[in-house]
Length: 510
Image (cartoon, rainbow, N blue to C red; front, side, top):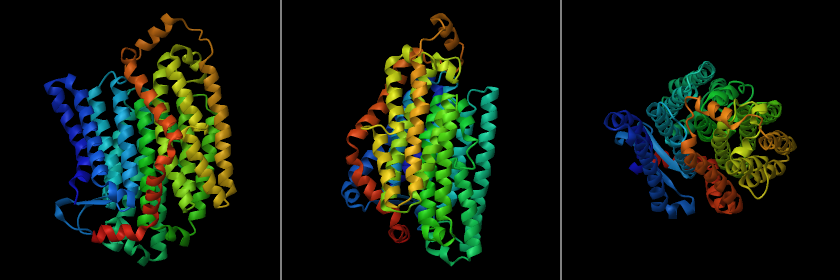
C-alpha cells in the first residue's frame, strides 16, 4: 500500500479546514499557506512518479491504499493506475497555476474563496483516485456544492441566478447517480468498482439497461452534452475568471474521467454494445459538438462563446472515445490534456483583458488588445491552438482525433472536427479583430469603471495574472513542439483503459 495516494486527497482537504484557523492567527499568511498546500501536492506527485518510474515505463504502475486496512471488496480503497495518474498530474498542474492566478485576481472574501477552491482540489483528486462507486458520488456532490458557491461568488443578481440554475441541474444529476448506486448495491451487494465489473453481466437485461440509462443521464448532465447544454453558458458568464478556468479546464475533465472509468471498467463497453447504446452515444456526442460550435458562432458574449466552444470540444472528445479504439483513446486523451490547458489559459487571460471592458459583450471588447498587447498576444496564441493551428498543441490533438475518426471510417466525426475548426476561425477572429480596434472610451472613464468593480482589484497585481497567462501559452507552444514526449504516457493510459481484466485482478487481488 502507498499512503501517498491518500495524502493527495488529504492535503487539499486539510488546507480547506485550516484556512479559517490561519485567518484567525494572521490573514496575510493565507496565500502562502494555500500555495504551500498545492506545492506539497505537487511534491507528492513528483515523488510517486520518481519512485515508480520503472513500473510506469513498462505500463505496470498500480498503487493502492486500503482505508482502515480493510481489503476490497469490503473496504474503501484508493487506486492509481496509468490512466488516473495522467489525470491527476494535469489536474494538479492546472490547479497550481489557477491558485497562483487567483492571488492576483480575487480581491475580497479570499478566505472563503480558498476554502472552496481547496475543497474542489480534494474532491477532484478523490473522484479520480477512488475505486468505490459511492465515494465517486460523494466527491461529485462536493464538486457540485463548492463550484456552485464559487459561481455565485460575486453575489450579484445574475450570479445568484446562474448558481441556482447550476445547482438544480447538477443536484438532479447527483440524485440520478445516487439512485444508480443504490440499485447496484441492492442487486450486487457491493460498491467496489472492480467487484461490480466482475458481476454486472449477471444482472438481467432490464436492470442493466435501467442502471446504465440513469448513470448515462447523470454524467451527460455533468459534462454538458446535448440535450443538457443550456445550463452551462450562463454559469461561465457570471463566475469570476479563475472559477470558469476551474469549471472548463478541470471539472469537465474530471467528469470525462468518471465517464471513461464507469463505462469501460464498471459497466463495460460490451454492455453498451449489447444494449445498442454505443452508436447512439457517439452520434449524440457529435450532435452536441456541432451545436456547441454553432451556438458559439452566434454568441456575442466572449465568456459564453468560450463556454459553447467547450461544449463543442467535450462532445468531440466523448465521440472519439466512443469509437472504443486505440487511436480513439490516444487522440481523446491527448485532446483532454490539450483542452484543459488551452481553455484554462483562455479564461485566465480573458479575465485580465475583461478588466478593460464595460461588459463581456462583443461590442465592449473593442480596444482591449491595445491596452495590454502581451497578454492579448498570449490570448491570440491560445485561440489559434483551439482552432488547431500548427505547431501548437491543439493542432496535434485535433490531428489525432481526426485520424481516429478516419481509421474508424466515421466520416461524420471527421466532418465535425473540420467543421469545428473552420467555425472557430470565424468566431475567434471576430474578437481578435475587435480587440485591436481603437477604443472610444478615455483612460479616465476606463479607470473609473475598473476600480468600481468590487471583486476585481487586479491591476496592482497584474504581473501575477499576466505571468500565469504566459505560462499557459508556453505550455501550449512547447507541448505542440514536443508532444512526442507524451507518446509513452498516452499509449500506457490507453492500454490501461482497454485492459479491464488487469484492473479487476489488481484491485481485488493486488
